[in-house]
Length: 219
Length: 219
DNA sequence: AATTATTTTTAGACAAACCTAAATTATTTT
DNA sequence: AAAATAATTTAGGTTTGTCTAAAAATAATT
Image (cartoon, rainbow over all chains, first blue to last red; front, side):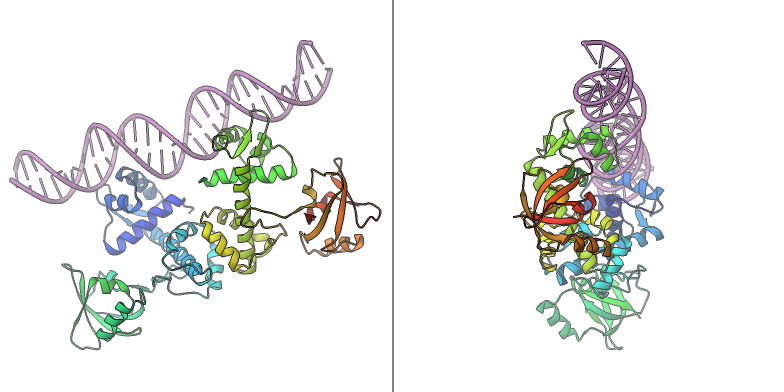
C-alpha cells in the first residue's frame, strides 16, 4: 500500500479530527487541510477505493483498520523527527512542526526504525505527545480524548504536555503527579470538564484545558 | 525561487551530466531521469522560463548561474544526509542512496545548516564525494572531471572514493597518497586516461577508473 | 409539514508532469 | 549535395489533485 503525500495528509487529518470529534465531516476536513469541500469529496472516494476509510456520502468518514494503521505510522514518523530536531539538532520545540510535516512523508521503513533506535526509543515528542511504537501501539492518550468513558475507567498519569510553571502549580494544588492513578467518573459536554477521583477520595473536577494537557494510559 | 521535487530532479541530473559530458542533450536527460524525450523538452521550457538553465532548441542545455547554485544545494543536502545515515544511523554506505534521494528535497534551509553542524561539517560523503559548503563552494572534484584541462594544471589529492584493498594497492604502486601534488598533463579521449606528473618526475598514466576515484583540489 | 438554510456531492475545467504519434531539425552517409 | 538516419520538438491526450458553479441531500426553522 503506497500512498502519495496528499493521501497521507488526508489520512493524518482524519486521524486527528476523529480523536476529538467522532465522525469527521467533509467541511471539517476541508478546513483542516485548507482546501475546498468539493476537493475533499473527490479524495474521500479515492481513499474509499483503497479501503483506507469507511465513508458513506453525506454521512462523514472514519478511518478503517488499515487507515488507522497508516495514520499511526505517519504520526510516529512525525513525532520521532520532532524529537530528533529538538534533541539532536537543537531546534526550539516551537519551531519543529513545519519541518516534521515534510520529514514525516519519507517512506523508508528502515529509516524510521534506525532513527527510533538512534534516539533510544523515546516515548513522547517535544510537545509531550506520545510516540506510537513500531507496531502502531500508542499506549498513552490525552485524558481529554478518553471520550468513550466506560463508567469508572482506571488510568495512570504518564506525562504532561508542557513544563510551564502555571501547569505545575495547578497539578501540585490538585495533588497529581506522574504515576498518579485515577478513576474517570464522568465527562460533561457543556464545558468538556471531567470528574475524576484519586484513591477513592472525593471527586475533583478537571477542566478541558487541563484534561488536554494530561497524558494517561489505561490500567 | 521555490522548486518542485521534479524540477529539482531535473536540475540535479543536468548538473551531474554536465560534469562529465559538456553540453547536456535531451536524450541523455531522458535516459537519466527515466522519462521520454518529449517530457524533457516540456520541462526544459519550464526551467528556461525560470532562468535556471540556458537552453536553445536542438542545442542542448547547461545550468545557468542560478541553476548551478540550486544544484549545489541539492547535492549538499543529499551528501549530508548520506553521511548522517551512515555515521549516525548505522546504514551501510551502499544502502543510503535511495533514502537520500527523498531527504534531499526537504526544503528547510535551517535544517541543512543545523544538520551540517551536528555532523561537524563533514567534507566528504560515505562514497568519498565532496560535500559543497553552505555557500555552494565545492573545492574538491574528481580528477576525471577535470575536463577543461588547461595545460599543466596543478592539483592535490584530497580523498579517494573507496577504501578497497585493490585501490590502495594501485595507489601504493603509483606512489600516490592523500596530499600528493601532481600536474595534469593531458587527457586522452580514446580511453579517457589522464597523464600526470608528480614533482617533475616522468609522466605516469591514470586510467579512467582510477581518475574517477581520485578527488583533487586545484592549487 | 413546509420552507429555508446548510452541507455535501456532481459536473466541468485547470495546471503539472507525464505519455504516444507525427512533424521538424540536425547529422551522417552515400 | 541529396538521401537516409537520428535527435528533438510539437500536437494532442492522460492522471492527480485542485478549483468554481450548480444540483442534490440533509438539517434547521417557522
